[in-house]
Image (cartoon, rainbow, N blue to C red):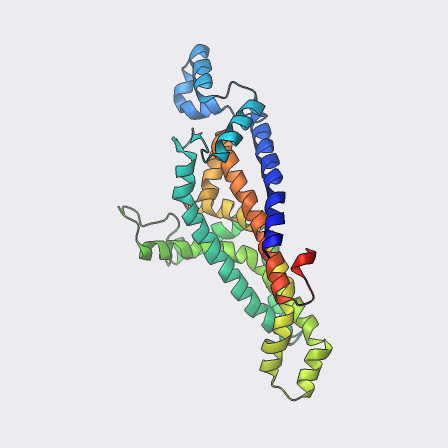
Length: 322
């Protein structure tokens, strides 16, 4: 396990370096002007000399390769630079927002896995039955629905029509402090929407895995020995059927990050994804590079976790061969 993690860490280093270089290159080619984004409306009445001086102060007058190399060497020592759009050190921006993004993604991912497993098992019990058709049809419909459309529909239904949940934010309007109760009530809607966007994949994978497992000889033998249907389903078929889901965990991390980007924007959730939008529109090189590196590291960590889980739970797979 340690050897696999070490190999992946060595592989991750050049990948992260290439990703950050690409971020600086794409941002440099962007039509957005970081100086005008930093100055705001004041840039409209400023002369060219003032804008050039501000561009030199921000360090965006140099070639992007030089800016990337300076940022990379400083990042290796723990200095991620200063965010021009947030007017804060990048480390402080990430530190303030990372916990809220992690909370949102963790709640949504756990809910999607648990509910998807339950629905997948129920659908696999009797393939072709009305329940199976209903679950499968709903999964395909949700799979095709854009996450921002689900988010807007959820706000209209649960916040505006039924007034059951707050429409956005982290705390109640006018609140001067963050409390656990307010965060719990405010996270339900965005986490629920994000979970619904991931739910179809887990449901369909579990359904297919359990359906295939029920047709295998060991499961048939368990039924022939007179074991109860519940024992056969949960003790034999589900254990075998969940193995493909382990690989799905890693592959869903990019989609989870993309979904969080839209969900946090719709619900004004103060997380990393919302800061990514502001950094991209303002061409904030240090913040954009740091957030992209963080997202890439999360994807690589998700793939590593999926491989480790597969190697631990499937005796046919050896971690030394990965």
